Length: 206
Image (cartoon, rainbow, N blue to C red; front, side, top):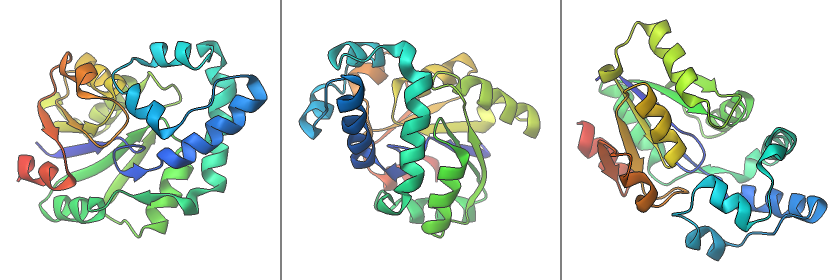
């Protein structure tokens, strides 16, 4: 294994509060239901479609809503931090010879701003998926660019859509428990690794 690809929001970046704030602003404008921290916990094992129904959100509005969310992220990036211990994990993986990339549906500019803000120099490549369900296409492009076989990669993420994308391209997946989705959703897709703390990422790989 040579390449470690990370999801961004919920895996590296502790950005939940930011998304809650912008969601609730948009909810008032577009008549969605607002969300609380308790709601996020109680819906961890619901699919995206099930959550959308619960919050009265029509999925066809994603192309309208997502640009507004990522614009809000850019304007408030100074309020976002990496999860505790993540910077040290990234640095150690890079020192150990792994090539580290990020594949996210967040805007590339937003990710690069946060990496600069947090003084992260261990990430060599940032790739953004224009569709929240299109990460498999981005991962395939990465493999083609680097002439890498699927078993040379590991993707680390927190959502079921991440592991589904990885399974489409036969890339091993590590689920981290501190993000958005619960294990009941994830276990059906058979992750190769499970990590409950950033240090466990290192334990699995080193």
